[in-house]
Image 1 (cartoon, one colour):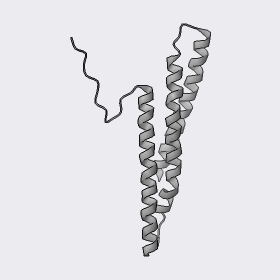
Image 2 (cartoon, helix red, strand yellow):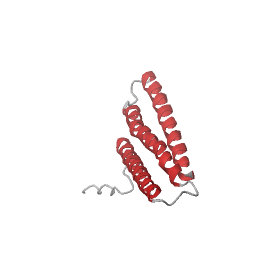
Image 3 (spheres, one colour):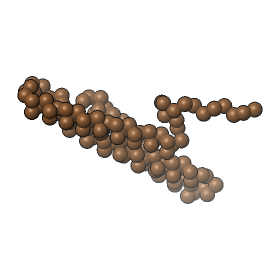
Image 4 (cartoon, rainbow, N blue to C red):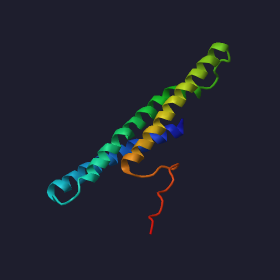
Length: 122
């Protein structure tokens, strides 16, 4: 649970930085028309899946909290409920992972499982 809370904090910080950087670069681009607008668009585009990541991590706290509760009964009903909670947790964490991959794509950065681009042919 502590790890999920830390992820939420880090993602919130990233969203804040993305928006601050986008506003700063937009102001610069308005003052100096020669500056590229692409960076502003990339930051704002990347912020969208990042906010979805935050949403999924936050929603994952509900089943995570229930699953880490000490002293749960071991009845058949509680075991089935735990299976449902684990499924919900997995669904939200998988969706958060996909949203993070979308963020990397929007920023033009390869992900950890993405092979590096081939070197240019000479």
